[in-house]
Length: 409
Ligand code: ATP
Ligand code: MG
Image (tube, rainbow, N blue to C red; front, side):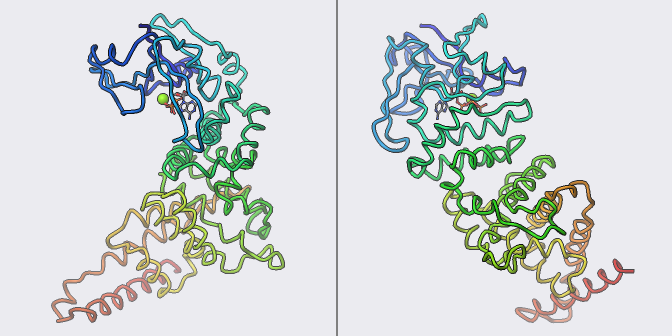
């Protein structure tokens, strides 16, 4: 049997990027031979094994054929006769379809190295269209390598467009979609992921609520970039520049969905878009079965981001309601993430990226003030049950009023 490094490991070595996980392909072996050498099988239907010592993935060279909709509709054929070239042709991009042996001799039948040098993401063969997930994968690689100058080949984008229009994207499961989306949002330029999906018509299918933001104007005085979609991309860009976690990036993407619902005659104003957007945010959350923390933060940021921006003008009662809504007493981290998302929203405006955001410290200070109101003295006074809750609220309000006055002077 011959063993080769394939996929990301080869690509990233040639790019001079750190290689994290290595995928291997084995040519000329049977399942029985792999098992005899101590490899552990990964799944029942896949000819994939884990190395007994390193735990890395070794796949038997295989061919694939589509036999139905979605990913379940694939049949694999693995046998010792399948060649390396046959295995490589089923892969998504030419830059991912190179292999190397232990002497770093490259096998590159589909010109991946040339595309790597030319900074092009190009599909290997028309079989690309057999798995619609590849649309998301290409967009994700575009997000990852945008800084290096990579773009999607026009013919690949065309194929992605055909796939998006064919209805095939609908066959993808929430789990596969979320895996790609969440990884893409954590890439260096997540806004490129959304842009590429939009360019090929996939955004309209996957997240019509986000797609609908493009072409919707906002008041120029607050939003020099004007377009709500452009703004959303900038907010996402800022979230990556500021190394925000996935929860915050997800909230950034969805925070303004309500603007897509504003009747044209109200443009460029978006009255109550925070509230109107909630049902859209909920729909997107559920469509992809986003993790609970992502869902929760996206809804809270959607509802309260303008409160964040107006923090210094909020009445003490409103400020308290905001803090209560976030349960800042038990969930300090979540409130921090809210503040971060608001700041990214403010920075995601053309020409205002560097402007300071004093609201952040003000909100942090307010949360600390509310948190530091002690329960013990109230218990000693004999408050309990709902009355204790009310008394606590009064004390917190008093403390917030003092905080607000101090900040104003
Ligand atoms: P990463 O750095 O994200 O791990 P990778 O290229 O190694 O990138 P993997 O998901 O680990 O990506 O997959 C390994 C290889 O398997 C890819 O390089 C590609 O050749 C192939 N591959 C993975 N998923 C698909 C797919 N859906 N369609 C076609 N080829 C795929
Ligand atoms: Mg990999």
